[in-house]
Amino acid sequence: MTHKDKALSLFSQGFHCSQAVLGAFAEELGISDELALSVSGSFGGGMRNGEVCGACTGALMAIGLKYRFTKADDISSKEKNNAVTSEFMRKFKEKNGSFLCRELLGYDLSDPKQQAEAREKCMFTEFCPKMVASAVETAEELMNE
Image 1: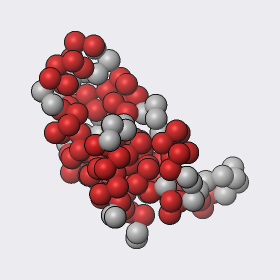
Image 2: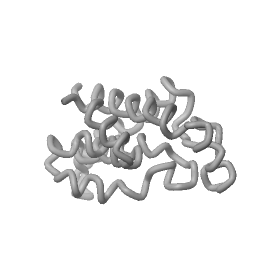
Image 3: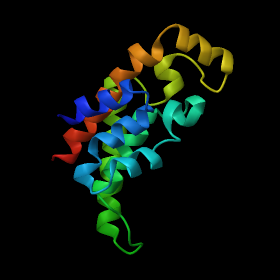
């Protein structure tokens, strides 16, 4: 199963976009599916407020695990992590027009009325899977360089 297939499967099961993306990379990054789903569970819907797309957040968590920066004096790791993170955000925005959930969806998810309207318009089932796929593809491209 590809990363994209796994992410879309997790998303279709009802997991948040952030969980789907990080979960797709969990095994190869040395964490359990349960840990991936747990740590990324609060980031869907742009942290429930339409901020940075949860699919991006899940991808950034995967990038962080791949390019670990765990020692304050490890400037090389810090620079690599920062560079890949910046490149991911640039590419995602270039492909999708934004990396902010509220701009991508056209709805402010911090407003319950707009969130309900987005749900009625099937944004979470028809649009969000495209963002999950885009985040996985972009992260995969950068993590395989």
